[in-house]
Length: 416
Image 1 (cartoon, rainbow, N blue to C red):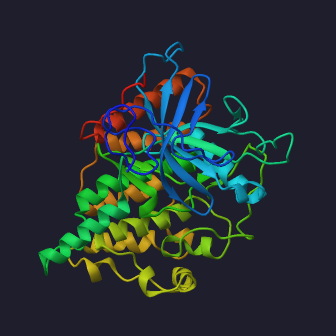
Image 2 (cartoon, rainbow, N blue to C red; image 1 turned 90 degrees about the horizontal axis):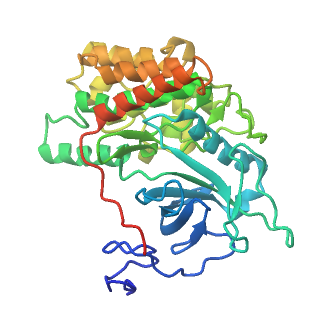
């Protein structure tokens, strides 16, 4: 087993930062242009150190990293900042549609700047042969080719690292608790706790819709719950932007219907044009699962094709089938939220949230009203307007303070 070069603490395989003394470990030598534990990237304003691989998906791989600011720079006195680095797979770099999805995610995060959305930090490309790597405009063209070989450096999206669990994890724990508790126990979360999470999700979606961003992949695994209680929406990789400015064209809905069958709206399954009501359908399913401990249509019992067809053709079972304690008012709100025809659903995110809040019998709060106001202000005009920017900053502070319930995790010391 490897040990720390400073304190001899035992390290997990590939660790780049010692969990005990926070000192940097030697690089393990990744492949060309590929991130790996131990890689260090000079960004000019500071040094990014890749710590560990967190996971991999269809488009890219995500790593935990630390940003150590240049001691002589403007943020020289700042503490090291944890980051999540998402690097597009090399084979996807040459596919324009996948590159466009990656650009969409970066642009969506940059535009939102919402307290319940993971924060955008930077979009760049990196080559170990170029000191400091090469910077890519977040809204600019595709990554450039290396001059000598035609090799394309995969783009890297640096964003906030969320320390916590997914809503999927939280639901699973509550389902296990319910089974141990026996008959009569709620199968999922209490309505007040479910609303605590849902209102933050709806606030993030409302702001996105105001800016012309449809998430298209709202599901429990894309909802992160920070350890201090703040919810963060993530994975805007297949988001639809009404007015993209990066120049890449992702597949149209008619060419591709991305998403996860258990949470897709009927119009998304059918490849039709989407608006925010598609996200509201998915959010309704997420709330259904949060309370019932399962979505209306179980992925474990059906194929992806059958799940998608159920979204189009099969009425969802009543929430009261799984949660007899639910009132008729709650059942009616779910029926509207999960209507097959988007015209029969709620017209806006805040309207849907108000209906669920009232049906649950939960009083309105300043943070819920601030989330609605944030979306309203976000839609009003350019964020650069001083008065508007100040108001958005105030609303961010209200939301963050209201939902923060625990201290932030400890941060590492600056390396010698």
